[in-house]
Amino acid sequence: MLSISVLVTTVLLSMSAPVPVPTALPSIKLPAVLQKVLTDYETAWRARDAAALAALFTEDGMVLPSSRPPVRGRGPIQAYYTGQGGPLVLRAFAYAVEGDVGYILGGYSRAVGEPDMGKFTLTLRKDGTGRWFIVSDLDNGNQPPRTPQQSPAPEAATRVPPTPPS
Image 1 (cartoon, one colour):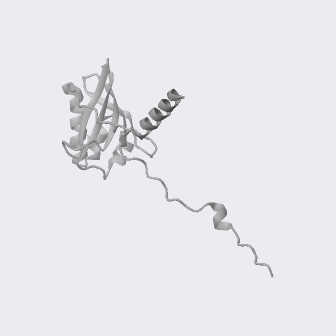
Image 2 (cartoon, helix red, strand yellow; image 1 turned 90 degrees about the vertical axis):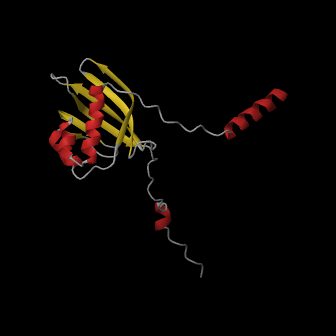
Image 3 (cartoon, one colour; image 1 turned 30 degrees about the horizontal axis):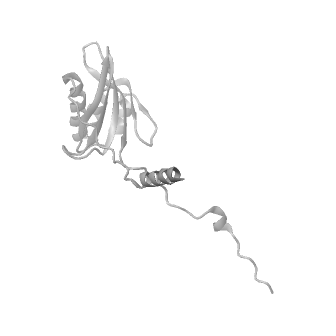
């Protein structure tokens, strides 16, 4: 009986323990040719230069924005990025390269030293000159998704009050 009490007490105490908050992954140093991809992206984004952003992608590159359909090809990517931009700092926390393909995983914020607002995955392909281009850009924010306003249950909206007795 004592062991059951100890077990129950242990379970209850563990349920009330604070949940650890995930910490940001540490930044890593990229090889210069991969860092150039991030630097060029930051520069074009800050300048609100949609043409320069689109030029960072392969001809059949894709932007995979959160909560929106994919955008494929440099022309549509340029149209998608038109009017977008502003302060941006990209940092990498993982990467890999195998032959002429690779990826960068990282976080983004508006200023150096600020916590990440979100994270991204860039898949990359190297062309014959050794330059790396973005094949796909997938990002999402760190804020929880917004929930739609609660509305009354449909039956409550159509319910007819009972007729009082006569």
